[in-house]
Length: 244
Length: 323
Image 1 (tube, rainbow over the protein chains, first blue to last red):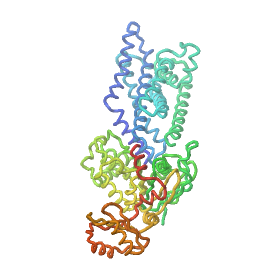
Image 2: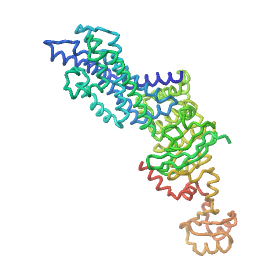
Image 3: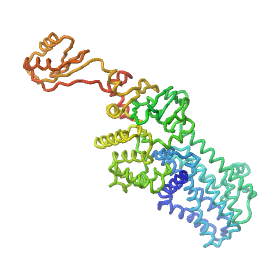
């Protein structure tokens, strides 16, 4: 009971203080909208929405979650208000879950715009809505955990943003967001296979087009495994770096 | 006396550097305990180990007799911490900050709202309750930070330099509030570089330097230990009297006392025995000396600190100000 009170209040505090601020809501709407518009303008002669749909959803989630988490955690660390959370009689695990919950919800919110836009305006077909939902949730979780992994190592917000860019821009090309992994040069492909977002995007592709690069079960297994590994590494890093 | 905190052989190492070296101490229930030392002495590292913000290299910590070295989260239920910098949320109001802090300790909505209002009244911040924290003055910020540490009625309050960098009026208010809290039963663990603050507030004090505790005792005992002689200073109106002649007469008339001139209008009288001031005053009057003031000079905690640690207070203050 005490833990759930702490969890809900950390989450709602983050939502009020960071995620529900007008600039962030507008980011969640404008960012995917701009990408969709760009795709539309660029490829309007032979526009296949189902091909770009998973990429835009994936990218909206990836950029939204990693940007916000690096701000919420690094900023609070810098202003020392994060100490208040570490001093509370709640486990570090619960504390991390509470902090990342907001970013996960923000990631899901970011995916809604391209989904609605694709389905309602471009009449995109979704083969499996359940898997699309699962894919969005898992991709939000894994992207948030990547953001957490980066935030734990950064001392300043700008540092966290720089590290994030170092990861997420290459991911646009490496994780099959717009270019299928199979089409990448053979020596780059191993890099794609060790990035968790690759499998998250593959789930999205499966749910929208019905076909994907890997088995859906392998995708689910690997994304969940990456989630556990990243959570565990971040937990150890927090204990090591923040409680010296 | 019941110990609320017992630290045994606490050591903190950072690679090859030993920040705290095998220190042991107890804090009694309801006590006002002070931790004094210069920068880098190991005060904050010790507090951080006690509150779970630093890992303990060796040694253990008991709270209320229970060894919580490996489960410091349990101890966090009964402690409140005021860090050396105000660390609440800038974008939230004072009231929301307090309610949020209450939620971290599992207080229900009603409990935290009631407690937040009560604390805002007690700390005279009720009129600023709905103002954002960032709009508060330094003194108000500090008061709200202390209030936030009290939201869950902790048994022990850790205060790290609570009055540094704030205005005089707020300092007085904060000192009074902390004193009242202690009188109402809260154990207070204070670190400060204002030695007069420790002298005024603390029951017992530990002097720490280079990671080691040099001395722990009650303020009274530390002062008595420092007292080497009885000293009285007599301030008089400056006139044309021959002061050397006067000192000579005094030393001849009063056996067992040593008189010297502290400055142009002050005589310092030192004796190993208790000094009876009235014959001295009568004698000076008979010599047509107009006395303005005669005062007993007591050793201060600062004297005790300097004597026991060998650290000059000015150096300590300058270091802190630089920080």
